[in-house]
Image: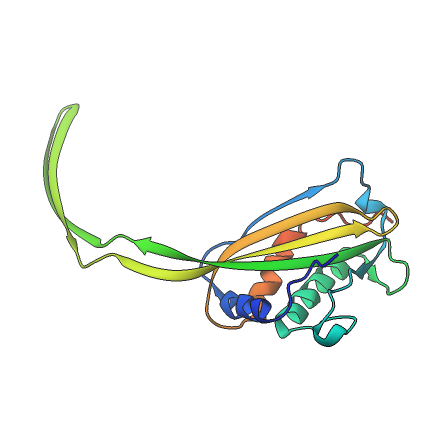
Length: 189
């Protein structure tokens, strides 16, 4: 089961992620009967086959940054990374779509008014100055899944979305992942 998009789309994604121009909107859910807090270790879901039939596709810089940010957050919560027999496996995928953001022109106005006692009134008029500002921005979505390998069932799912501009800044990825995994349960000790 492929849970990572690797290659040109991933590079484009994090090229666009550089400087976020808006806040990230995150949401997550835990399977109703899952006890994620009972888990103590994690591993990674396998990537899809790469070119030439290799076992795994090469890891892009963007995927490496995302994987590192996820690892950092899970370790800070108290989970330990293991290769063999983890309590749950983490997978992620990314998607970017371009959208237009329109800003209306600046308006300049003149107004008059009068007030007396408990009543008042005013009249104003305004005119647009300049034209609409249309920018193309990338809206990026990061999805992270936790899968119980014993039951092959998703036990936690989180997504975060945000607008992005060109540039490459790993701290944007780290902040988006930290915000998203804030809702991931910490292990009970």
